[in-house]
Image (cartoon, rainbow, N blue to C red; front, side, top):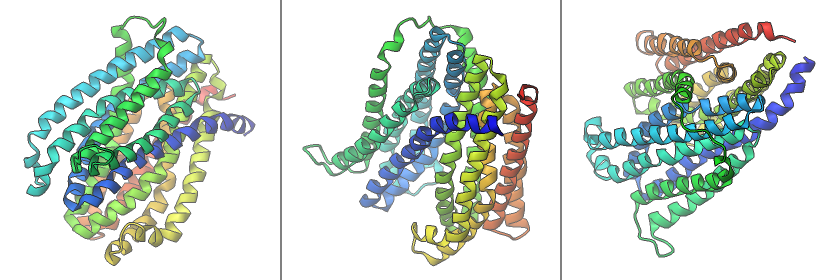
Length: 436
């Protein structure tokens, strides 16, 4: 226990700015929605559809780039700065490649927007905004690489500070370009896309300026390095896609049940997504600290780092569970005044209170395993938990057993519980030989 408490403080110090950064990323989307919502319902619907497509590419890209932080932390622990700068250079090249490929694919999708069954008035205004958001993936991925590099060196507040400033810049630019203030043209809905692309590009420029001295001594691009990055990144991206796809499919099933269940699902999911940022930050910190410890040869602290992050994440999620169970109705009324939606969302938040511990446990354990370089088995576990348990179970409970929306969320809870149990068991098994 002493070793766990000893390692908990540096993990929390690293995790705190990461949590703030993740919440700030959410605030950028919330800010966009707030400004677009003032224009009208049709632009807001177009933005929502755009985000639902954009986020799939974002999840995959972030997963593919996760190796930058893990390998940089490992080599930093080993004291090899030249290899660290090499990961930055290779990560930047990979970010440009992934971002460019994503833009090309989304460009093709943008010519087929009418095939997705969206209302004609939504499709009519969507494409310029859709393309601008697609282009923003390039600076988003490039920023992510540089932020991971700084996180691996124990300097997470740099990237987080840039993101916090970016939230304000994005809000200001939305006000300028949507309404045509300060001499700018009034671009309406498209102006929000211009604002977001500009803000994300400025963020990249600022953090690149901060890292301007890291170019010196970086080795030439090597095929072996890209293989290492993709060897960790492809399974990680697949696991993230399995999880994201499961929740997207759950939303689809909610839509089959009607507009009220879909709206209640969105309300409850918004609350759950916010609380998820806390264990996610701990997972990112645990991943970096475990990888660094491996580079330092300090295998005896691998389990204490993971156990400390898991315990702290569980405590935080237990607190959120109490809030969901006792104040679910109050939270739901903050999103909508529709009594039917509020009532159902309150019930769904009651289910969410049960799976908070599972959700926090599975993401922390997955992060700890990434720090160990273990990604293939966790990917298989994620597939089983979400696509063989959660989704089929949700369909059966909702449509065959007659539990409706509660059946979908109960099955999600079961899938998260399975993932937490199996991922936790694997982490403890892999660190058994490294116990102090």
